Length: 147
Image (cartoon, rainbow, N blue to C red; front, top):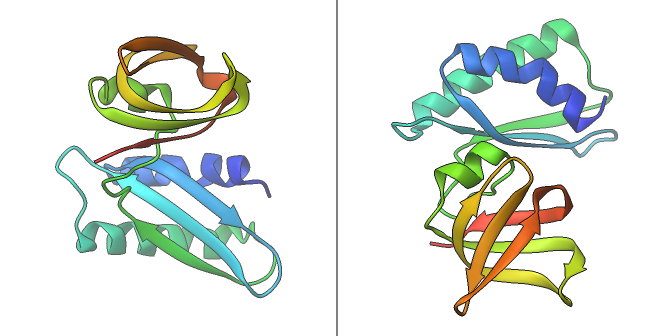
């Protein structure tokens, strides 16, 4: 099962509990498997929220049994340097400082650190040292808030 397939399985159950899946990481197979889920909520995330989601996801994974081998399940908040993985994340954090790593160079560079000026379904605009750079979302390797 891929990380995307796992996300499709788990996300509806997590959303029914009132949380957003901010990010999901899966390293499966062998003895050191890991499923790490980052959840978010407009009121923030407390330890009790992580426990609640962990219990629900654990039960769902026990019933569905979609994962080979052993794995550890971790549920956490996205933290201050949260990853931006969805168009909605970019839109929510416009005006904030971001660090973006591109898969391919844009205008000769792959790293951008500056203010997230705007975003739409296809691109974000990051202002670095007074210069605006339009970056295609599809070719972003990682994007994080800088706090």
